[in-house]
Length: 137
Image 1 (tube, one colour):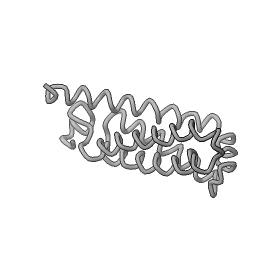
Image 2 (image 1 turned 60 degrees about the vertical axis):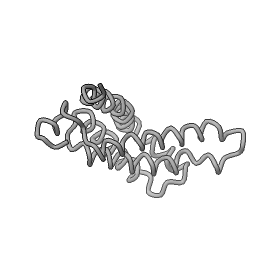
Image 3 (image 1 turned 120 degrees about the horizontal axis):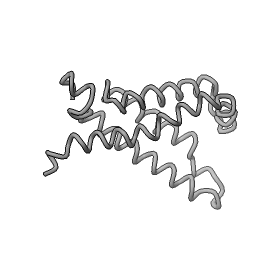
C-alpha cells in the first residue's frame, strides 16, 4: 500500500517543508536589516554575512526542494542550516527557566525538521519531481 503512496507522500513532504523555508527566506529579503540586528543580538558573528547566507539557503534550497531539483543536496544544505540555526537561536539551556519551554519546543521542532530533511537527502525526491524526470532519485 505504501509503495503506491510513495510519490504523492514525497511530494507532500517536499511542499510542506518548502512552506517553512521559502517564506522565511523571502522575509529576510524584506526585513534584512531587522534580521541582521536580531542575529547580532543573539551573538552571531558577522551577522550580515550569516543572514545573507541563511537567506540564500532558505530561499534557493526551499525552492529546489519544492520542485525536486538537486533534492539531496538542497535537503542536506537545509538540514545543516536548520541544525546550526537551532543552536544559535533556540539555545534554551542558556535562558532563565521561565523562558526555556518555548525555545526548547522550537529547538526540538527544528531537530525533527532536520530529520525529515535528512530523509530526503538519503532517499531523494521521488518520481514526481525534476530529479525524478531525470531519473535522479
